[in-house]
Length: 333
Ligand code: PHE
Image: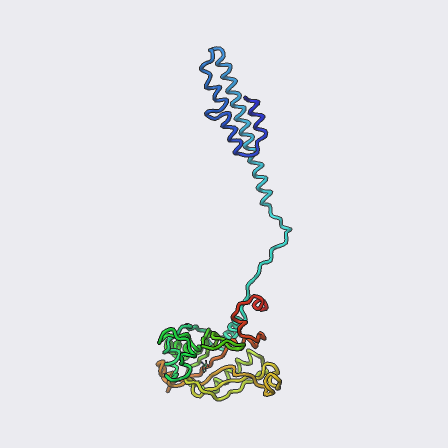
């Protein structure tokens, strides 16, 4: 029995086999146990001799099992270490970093310029009340922009804001002058999509309300902003315009970004490019709507199209590219 056990034990490779062997020889029904059980049948002379032998065999087998267990443990440990070894010479895996969308970059740049000029950045909701989007902004009931064909209505009183100007109302209703804020975000109009139009676009609203705020302050602010954004040699031109919530109102053109005002094909030789923003002195009626005394305070406001600026800055000729999330486009920034 001993030789059989010793022979088998050498061929073992794992703990399970070792346990099987222990049961086979030393278990309740094991081979050696059977011998010990059969002792009663032996004669008085044979019993002590066989008993001693059987016990010795048992000790030897147990010892060998213990040794083997230790050996197997060491081998398993070694294999594990081998497997888990870190090869520090393998080149690292490159991981792909995401990056900022050109629109987000533009918004951050605009916000930074205005923050440096002492403006606070605030946010307003994209889903607005008709009251904030039109009524309080002095937009008359029959104004074409209120038309169903221009505005996404959700209910009779709720809509997707058509501009960021309702943020003006929120700020003036919730705060007392002096106020100096900008607010960027999404705006929505029922436009057909083409290279420069999208039913969803982005605006940045600015509002300043304080004592003695004048049109000169407005012009100066816009001038500085345009120079910060496009460079020192950029000039601005104010053209009279109409908005119900500002009086007087103006649209602002800037030097042609292509020729910097010298006159080229792109600006038809005029040296000026596009209406970049709308602005004006806050209509006293709007101040009153928001509980601000127009006798004591005055203010100016402006709103500009962010998508347009992003397209000029990053030389993107199709607004759709900004919203399609095509990786081939996005990875360029
Ligand atoms: N809300 C106007 C627009 O969407 C822009 C504007 C804002 C004009 C503030 C004047 C003052 O066209």
